[in-house]
Length: 251
Image 1 (tube, rainbow, N blue to C red):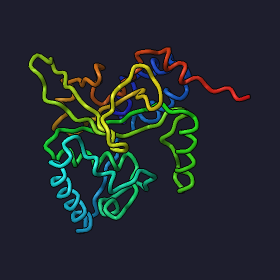
Image 2 (image 1 turned 60 degrees about the vertical axis):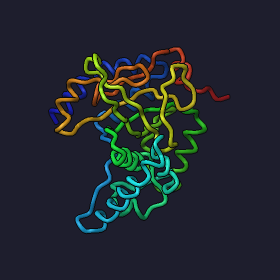
Image 3 (image 1 turned 180 degrees about the horizontal axis):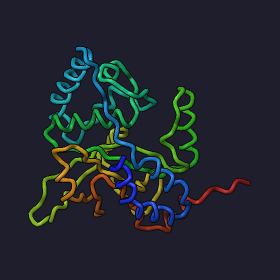
Image 4 (image 1 turned 135 degrees about the horizontal axis):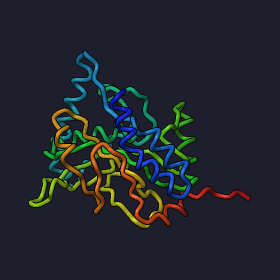
């Protein structure tokens, strides 16, 4: 609990910044709701079912690495994006045809590790139009799920941050690329807003072996500095976000 309080106190500046952008309720509400939300993790049962499923996927990932050097796009050939019941176990993943962004991010992270890459979970808030949000909300509700990942015109998303090796003279700054496992593509941050724009990002590094590294390093994505384990608002052009986040007036 002390850690949670400290984290909230540390991010007060981020919440103040969120409230200053256009329609503040969506962004600040999302950041408050997600501040203590960890990235998704696929669990394992104690029996052999999950060990078998995990070993199967690991073997497939190792074999596919050389065939897909641009990224594990082959995952979308096996799993279609859609609602997923959590908690989720490896044996359930192996038997499923559908996986949400959290499950797909877990699978993509393992695939990248099989290819020898260093990866970390990435959480994002992305901007979409009202009709897209409404369609996703209906899709989740029809399947009996609570679409709690939607916040007005913003959608919570999970992805994979691939960490590049530090360059000489980088002063503790590590370049990252962010892989979107739902759409099998590398995300590029866009300053001009628009459909699917990343409004905020958080790169998570909570493992004990990386705790010291997390304090010393900052990540760089698209020229923007991102501190580990903290939400970073990517709103460089606030006029664009202000227009996009304004509530629509219905006739």
